[in-house]
Length: 338
Image 1 (cartoon, helix red, strand yellow):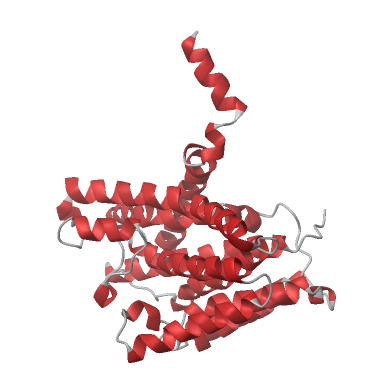
Image 2: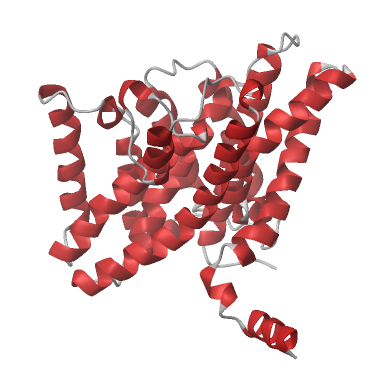
């Protein structure tokens, strides 16, 4: 069955993004453990895919939001999507750090670091949040705030407003010596996603169709190019290729219900949970003494499984406020009182 809704492509791109991240972190960690093999540097582009997708989704989800009520509705939906899951893993990580400090590379648990992590406040000197992957969510929250004001102030020209404000903060970070956080050119990748949404909203994605196999060939070629790219020029060497990857994906009629689409649906839980599941499985695999490529493959499968379970149990249920108001939960608590 073919699905006409092109957001299937976006979901599949999420699946590709999280797989790239897993490949990079897995190879990077095994090489650091002196296991002989290459680091899959192109996997870093998974984050760039996520940023561009986020820019697309934010504009898409807020297309009918107007004024202060619309801005509140937008921010509420975004916070409910991001915060519960992230806070859960932050608390878990903090607990592990307090109980087993010798098992972690960092020194000790610090309350300030913990609070900054929970509030998505970037620390100075490029110190990552407690869950190191959370640096990407700090940028997500930054863009949410910028977009919040665009909804309050404007019903039209939002792209122009958001672009000018992000560019202003970016340039001001150099002249006013702001936190280095604002000097990272990944902030412009959100705008690339917004451009793709504008393209999509005008219906231009119907202008031509691309066979899925042709898209896969181009995807592999671009990943190969990014594998030898200079990571210091992230926007140019990762952001632009990722923009074209997502652009082309909008012109493909993907099959509904594919494995990649399912991975994309659970990508947020996979992304967060692998901060814990990957170090664990790497320690196990190093003890088993398997070769590099088998170890990488098994670690990725394990992280996908843990992330999928976390998605089904935590993200879709325990950490979802709407689930607690569902008939299923209400009837369960009523039965306990009988």
